[in-house]
Image (cartoon, rainbow, N blue to C red; front, side):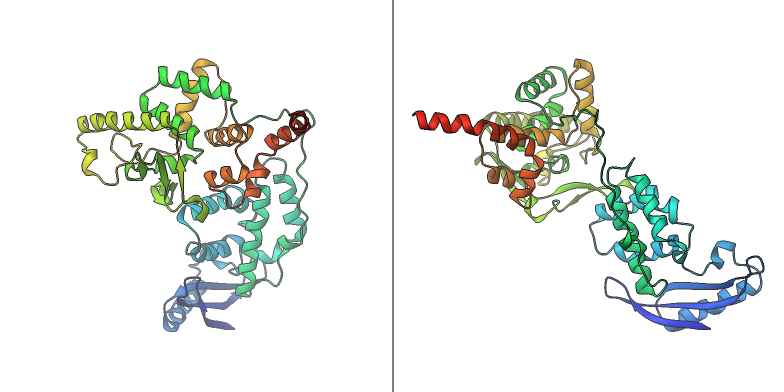
Length: 386
């Protein structure tokens, strides 16, 4: 009662696996089986299978190793090996972390065949009350079951049969505006300029003037700042990979690779910062002129600034001056909101933000378009009077 067969990984390589009967468990009275994968040849798989049988007979296998090879954790580990080849490193890290924090504590120790539709439904219902991205968890669980079906471990996917609960909004919940008004932004930048180091002011000035994502600004190099044409070229994004390492990645989507025009004042500040940075880095032993990939914003080792640092900078200003708190991403929302209110065409803003479609922009900033809609009758009346 043993099976040795070849299978294909996502990257196209061929590997071997085995599944074999070991005996009857003296405690549970159920069959013990073992399954192992990722062998280079059939001979390796067969040799490993024989070793496992001997270890079982000698009582050398730990209890967890005597599973039927269908624990959710075991299938997840196999799926993870292939998934890594299909997505960006930063996406892989975020997905695995979500599994570890939310899904595995609930299902990791359970056999795939024992998990029911009701189990998954109860889990998602519970998470819907506490986790904003609870819908992603349903997708995560479904992925593992689909892979288990491919391996022949189970025949159906309970995650595909559940109902996604409606997100309940609290009646007394006050919606927080995650963007600044024009006056709020001017005050934030003014205090930042007066009270914080120039590079911090420069970061938020550029963030506000461009509408870029935090990682896009932290990945910006001077070679992509065009002083002659008064613009910046977004070609990369700072991302976090395995072991929390920072690295330069492709932009979020193909639409994120773009050129953004800037106002004259922001360009002057950039020129000022470029000169100041050269002086500061020379004192630290770095010649920024000889570095063709010099970062616009770098730490004292002339390397990447941590992705969490801008939030620290922002909170220093907010708490000291009792300003309204928004997120760092809120400066991107501020940029888009102010442009929409000023009458800039949504399509232009969509391209500036790097959205895949204009609909994404309209959906995200519906609060602005609704306000603009209420002003339409007055605009029409004014046109007719002229």
